[in-house]
Length: 346
Image 1 (spheres, rainbow, N blue to C red):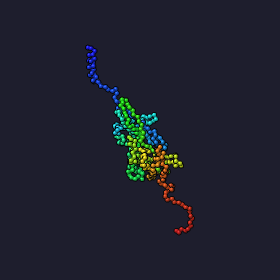
Image 2: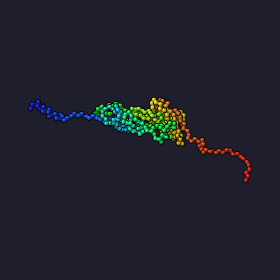
Image 3: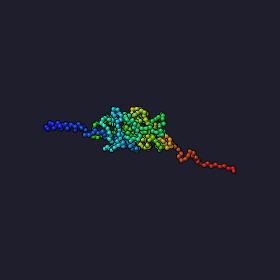
C-alpha cells in the first residue's frame, strides 16, 4: 500500500471523530459580581460635623444591611435585587457593606440603600423614578399633644422624623462579559438633613415636658432620582431637651433645644416655615410659643451649619404663684393692745 492510499484511509477514519467533537471555551462566562458600598457620613451637620451643643446626644448612623436594587436604564423597571451584609471598615473608619449579586453582562442602573430604618419607610420599589422614602403620620394620641393651637383644621399633617437613609446610585453602569469576579465600588450618602434648634427660656424650672413641631418641610424623597417632594408640605414633630448655652450674656443660660432629622427644607418655595414649641408645665397645663422660621433659615448658621438659633426668649410663667408661701389665703394679724376700762354687770 503506497503512502497516498495510507493517507486517504487515515483521513477517512478520522472523520467520525471530528464530527463528534465541538469547541468549548476554557471558562464559562461568570454571572456573579461583587458590590462594595462605602458609607460616607463624615460631613453630616450636627451629627459628625458642626456640632453646636456638645451636651446633647446626636443620632447614631450605623447600618448592618443594605438593599441593592438593579434597574433597566431604559424602562427604569426593577430587574433584580439582593441584600448585602458583610461589614468591614475603610482606612478612614468608614463603614463598608459588601456582598454578591447574580447578574449577566449588560448596562444597568444601581440604587443601594440601608435596610435597617425603623421609622423611614420605602415604597414603590419596582421603578427607579418612583421609589420613595417617607415617614408615617403620628398617631391621633400624639397629634393632640403636638398639634399647634393655631392649626386651621384636623387635616394638619404631622409626621415622625425620619431615620437617616444612606443611598448610593450608579447610572448606566456597563458590566462587560467576564469570566472572573467583577467588583463594583460605590459610595452611599444620606438623603436626610439633621438640624439643631434652640430657644432661650426663662422659667425652665416650670417645664415638665417639652416638644416642637416645624411645618413647611418636605414629606419624602424619591431617592432613585434624589428629588425631594414638595406638595403637599408636611410638619415634623420631635421632643426637646433642657440644656444651656454659655454664649448668652447674664446668669440665665437655659435653652430648650433638639437635634432633629427631616427630608429637608423646600428650596425656593414659600412654604410657611413655622415652629411651635409646646411645654407641659409642672401643673399639667399646655403652653405654646409659635414663631416663623423663614428668616432663620436664611441665616449663614442655618445654610452652612444647619443651626436654627432663635433670638427670642420664651418666658414660662409660674403655674402656681403664691405670694404667701407659708400659709393659706386668710392671714390673720394681731395689732397692739388697747387698754379699756368699764363695769361688767352680772
